[in-house]
Image (cartoon, rainbow, N blue to C red; front, side, top):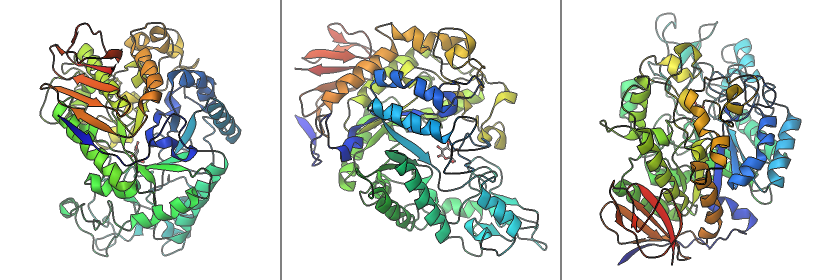
Length: 555
Ligand code: BGC
């Protein structure tokens, strides 16, 4: 007996309609300052990306998602943007950007750029004008300024803590305070201000005109805010439901007015540009609103990223999200790793602690990497999980280095950290630098081939064994597993649906409409291998399907 996950979404082939390429795309996230450094200054750059386009082509991805490349003091790795319509001179120029777009497009790879609408940097010209213009000015109205509490306004307007720890309000010279949900260098915009809205529409057009194919929208659920004269305390704020669109900050219903407007701009282009929301919201139903075709079109679903390597969790997540995407008229997204979380090859190798793997990864980082980690198990499971994901309908978002089976770096010396989360919440938040260490391209040599000027975060000695060079010619490497899977995926993605096939305990088995089957054994021992020709497997397969292994089969 089988359970059918129905999908009315039209069938899509590799030659899908230009307007729907994103529905089942494999999207590779580049964190530009850690990808490849062409000019040898220790920081990755756009020319570095251009030099690696053949690598991306060989890997077989459909699109690149480029994390912020805008001018920035790097108070938050580039998510503190000084100017939304320029390139950071540390990593290139607008001409380099155009050259990169052309090189990617020539390789048939689309480009999605990160856009950061919740906050700018404190070096943005508007914030500088706001400081200079003073209280009550139109310049200040573009941000969220308030008088303080206390007799002389010496206390912040509320006791809120920022997402990175520490206070969410910072006082300026004339005594007022501004809100920043993240670092103090990231003042929040006031999205009730029409100028702010219009300026982002200009920014969208600016990059669309330069040829980008879409946008990843940072903290999409935070832009609309309703801040009463008397603000709730942090404890009260934490108790307010985020399920009904009325929370003062997160996932307010009005936020959708912003993205409805954005959609109109994105639809001015042919094909319409795509957008994917980063929206950490209370339910798949709330997430689906961002993914509506009248708004951004797609939203990240972080459920697999937050799950354990566990068949019940995986099955429930897959079924729910395929259903939700269908209701939204979108396709779902899958992701195991990104620049904000401990890499999944490490998460899956950690001994069980209370709670879920993402948390365990943080515990492990806080221990300086001294808690037990089974690297082999982590990699075996990560390969099985990734091959499971690449067999699913929908878009797969991959983070640079996961195709190498790269693990998290735990032993970054305190004085070499960069992440504000590490500094603003000492001893509590290990920060995210461990997944942002520059990529190893060669077995050895200066910064393992990242660039001739060293790496801006220290690379451990084991990086060489996980380098592109080391894995390139090894048929069993993780790199070659991803390459083969991405090549096969073209054919696998014939339609956006799957049906579950009955399977033994701890095994998930599904069939795609073209008859291809994906089977993952989550247990540690072997199980019977279902009938069919093995197209690819995440580990060695004999007469049986070994533990923690995925196969794709065809009858
Ligand atoms: C990004 C983070 C960033 C934060 C503030 C996030 O969701 O992914 O890397 O620190 O937004 O912009």
